[in-house]
Length: 87
Image (cartoon, rainbow, N blue to C red; front, side, top):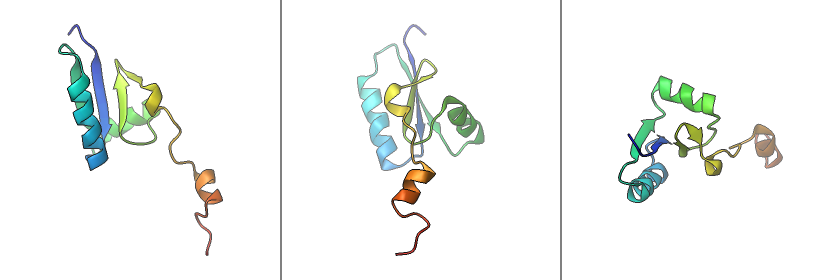
């Protein structure tokens, strides 16, 4: 393979599917696009090792894309917004 390996970690939801379609549309002809279902234990373990904290997420040649490396939901931030607190 002379192109890049692009992997999309997906929950199979409409948001994930929209990103998959966009990536497939824009990927170079020699790129390989793989969609990885987070329902599979090995995929979830790989995602955790790479630092994936929210979906969809994309790796390019094994490295988590900068746009996908955000922290995702943080318990402390959610608590500040009212998680665990009565109204």
